Amino acid sequence: MIMWKPRAKKLMNIIILLTVLACNNMQKNQIPAALPSASGDLPQATEGITELKRGDILVRPNLNLFPGTSIVPSGMGFGHAALVVTGYRHTHVDSLLAGVQIIESIARDVSTDYQIREISGLVKSRFDALNNDNFDGRYAGNRYRLRLNLPEAQIDSILHFAQAQKGDRSAWNASKAFPGNSFNDSLVRLGLRQNWADNDTWYCSHLVWQSVFYVTGKDIDVNEGYMVYPNDLINADIFDNTPTFSGRMRF
Image 1 (cartoon, rainbow, N blue to C red):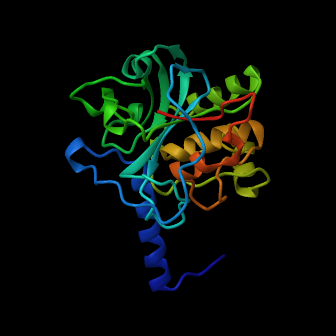
Image 2 (image 1 turned 90 degrees about the vertical axis):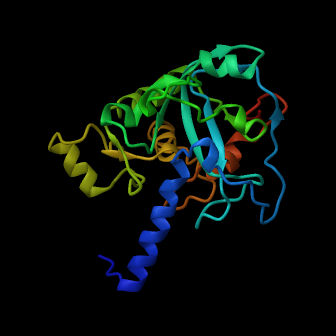
C-alpha cells in the first residue's frame, strides 16, 4: 500500500477533483473561451456529419490545462463523452442529434435514476435530469463523432454493458477496472458485482472507456493514464481514418 505524505495527498486530491470537472456540464454563461493549444494540429478528422450509428461515441474536447490530459486544440470547458444507443440519419445536425438516443454519465445534482441515463442526443428541458444540451450548437465545429470498426455483436455488448450501469452514480473518484484484480474478483464471487469491470460510480469518458475495454480489450485512452479524459478518446489512434473507414469526424 502506498502511503501518501499530506502535501502529496492534497495535490493528488486537487488533480482528481479537476478531472471530474472534465465531465461536468456548465451553463451557457459559464463556458470559458477556448484557450490556445500548447502544440500540435487538430486530430485528423472528416468534416461534417449526416448519420450517427449505434455504438458511435460523441465527444467534446476538454480544456488542455487538466493534469494528465492529452492535447486537442480548441479544447474548451470541461468536455463530455457519450455512447449512441439508437442511430439516426438527417442532414441537419440539430435534427440528427434530436433523433438519436445516447447513454451518458452526467455530473449533475439529480437523482441516481438520472446520473447514468439514456436520453435524446438533444432535448431541452428546465429540469437537469431531462435536459440534454451537451452537444448543441454552441459547440459547432468542436464536436467529434468517433466510430469503432467492430462487428455488430460487439457493439451490442458494449452498449449492454453501459446500459447495465443505469442506477449507478456519477463520481469524480471512479477508477478504471482491469481483469485479474483480486479485489474485484472477490466481489464477483460474493455476488456483489456482475463482472470484473462492474463499478458503482462513473464519469462520462470513464463509462465509455470501460464499456469498450470490457468487451474488446481495446484501450481507447491514448496515453493510458489513471484518468481517461474526453481528449484522450479523441486522440486515440484506433479512430484514425483510413481510405475505407471513417473513424473520426468533426462537426
